[in-house]
Image 1 (cartoon, rainbow, N blue to C red):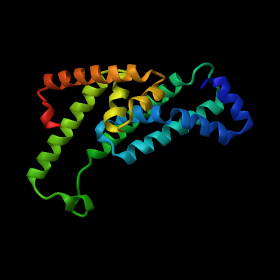
Image 2 (spheres, one colour):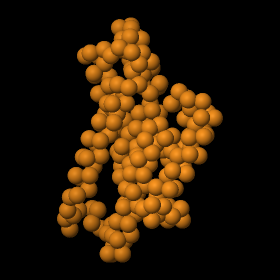
Image 3 (cartoon, rainbow, N blue to C red):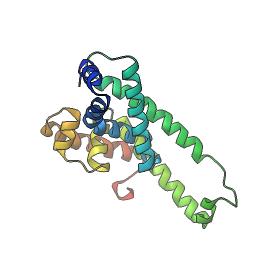
Image 4 (cartoon, helix red, strand yellow):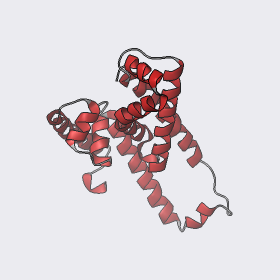
Length: 190
């Protein structure tokens, strides 16, 4: 969608313009949010981040219209908001537990803590490796393997041909395997 097109629709109906923008860019924004938050964020965290991104986009476009394609603008807002949310989540996870805290009752032993730590570290490494693939490969991998989207759905999201998506999935998966192997992670550990 072009900025001019959005501005014209906004003049006619604010809610219609927002809905059209949301419908067109939801999958794209969701992929960026999931990529930025990595596996550290829950689905709820990712959904909140998506809502924040669209709120910022709507407010920004209403204050100052953007000319040309909106994809670049939305991408920038999404990446920055995702990074901010990731930092916020990281700060929250660094808090200490109180004996009165409900989460403390779920901690049963040092073995569980060590296993959880190992799992989080593995998730962080996988997320870093996926991010290192760059765009659009990281988005394609997340959409394919995390959201279980088809090549046609991903192609539509990224304005590509399904055959190009399939080829990129294969190449990205090979690169990801190699990057994980460099860090000593085998497929069986995932």
